[in-house]
Length: 219
Length: 386
Image (cartoon, rainbow over all chains, first blue to last red; front, side):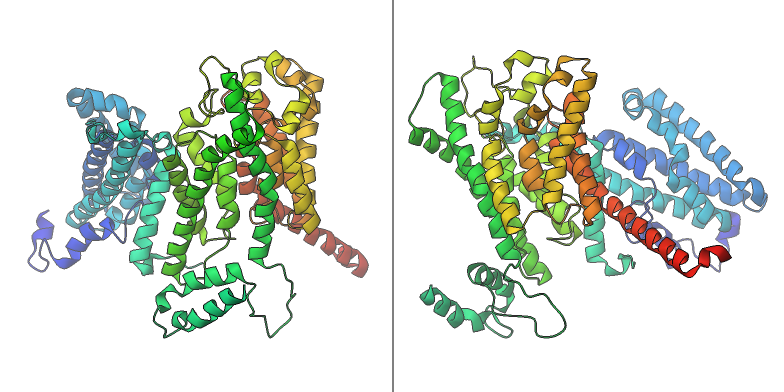
């Protein structure tokens, strides 16, 4: 960190802030880079696991980025993928153990998907594309930014899937209080099935591309 | 008619560029061209001029569905009163069915066309006429007792996610009406399957299972006679029960050349052949039922005539059409007989093959290119050099 505190670049210079804010929208890991789709489908049936998953990814990605960034000049290029995996795997095991100790129920719901953070494309993608070539402080910001970009998509998708699929928000039966069920409303079973996560992500992509035309891919 | 034409001509300038209602041009245009054949013709280049524009094509398909719709209305009444053990006159049966089915048709059209108009306005297109057919198909493939809000929701889903996302009419990958049905089927399984939903307000003691429902649970004795199923005196979705009424529509579609006979024929052939194959294996009672029964049960005939032939989602090449149709028939019967989760396989088979039809076309086209290349090489002797 000490290297970063040299006077020529402020910690929260606009260039650094971009690392946090760009992944939220125009460099979003899910909707633009199309990374980490698998877990976006798997853990978004309910809001709670989605939030826990987001926090886990945030922790792993931020630390992994910093660690790899610190090691970047000592890693031989040929074995860099293995080193990255070792770092990610150690962090994931830590997160997994912490979840089991303090949030056992949620860790049950997330089951293998915490372990599968190791194979989450966002992690390898950011380590390869950013941490290997940048200093620790920007790497930390990049990690946090991308994890937040991942998180808000996950949370939006989970919000709609839980609300329409189970009629609850964070396990709280909201729709029951509105009395919709009495006039014949029923929960939508399709929302609980994985394809609907894909469709909601698709709708987010649609809205995003509509608002920001430069994101539209040319053939 | 003349007065109407005059009225339209009088208000037309207001919808042109610079007019008072310029923004509503696409809405106006939709109504004008729906009422009258447009007088605009192509002026340059080589075009085929034909009186059958898209709206006229769609009208033929809607007309072809009328027998199935009317019979469906009557059958809804017939099944209802039969389950109660009462018998009413023809008109009472029809009226009961009309009251049940007509609101579904209205909801389907109002919601679907509403979305079409909104998208046409936003995009500055003309309103696509594709929904005229879809809007009639959807009421025919849902159970008579379906809540109207579910119909509306499925239409919203199908038109936006199934069609507008891909660019509107003619750009969709999946059949829009079947997308709506698949949405309902997975979202509200209690209202779309089982033996409670196929007869409107049925008496509790009466078994309301469709022939396919009976077969799924191994109740082979309970299925109706072939003629009952052919005429359509069975519970089921509104328009799918009567193979006879559907065939009347098929005759109109084939006579006008709107639907492709290759697809239709090969779907029936595929289903029948698969039925025969199961007869040969016949390790259980379901496999042993006569192959031609498959063609009149459930939505098979309806799917073959009105869904599989959808020119947008079907394969485009001649050979591809045979392949596409055969596979639909085969997969539909395969799902029916072997998959315990789905009593009817027609919907899934058609949607599945919709996805595969571009692939089929791709290989047909490439096979043709390769064949011609080979011929070229043989004629010019290039092959010797290689």
